[in-house]
Amino acid sequence: MLDLNIDAKKAQKAVEKVLDNEEGLEVSEIVIKAVQMIATNGKSKQKEKSKAKNMDENDIRFIVEEGRRNKKSAYESLKEKGLIKQVEKDFFKAV
Image (cartoon, rainbow, N blue to C red):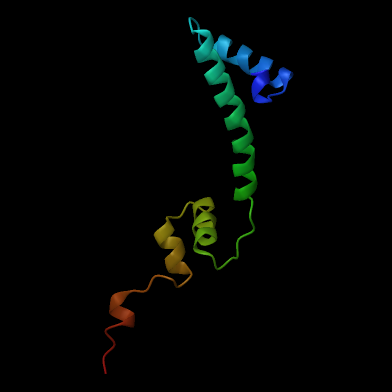
């Protein structure tokens, strides 16, 4: 793993975690799982940062998220904001 430019301490911790979780693995399997573990730890931090974007309060995702916090369905939340129209009221007005 040192040939892959992975820090020795990180590599050792990853190998120890793999060995704690699973027994009877061959050396190549241990190395693969340890490298995967190191790679996924870096990616999960990046995903958390990208989710923290500020959303406009008119953004559909924001409206649905707020509704879920208030225990409402996505449909109810969007309807309250006027993004979902009722066909009878808006499209079939008597002339």
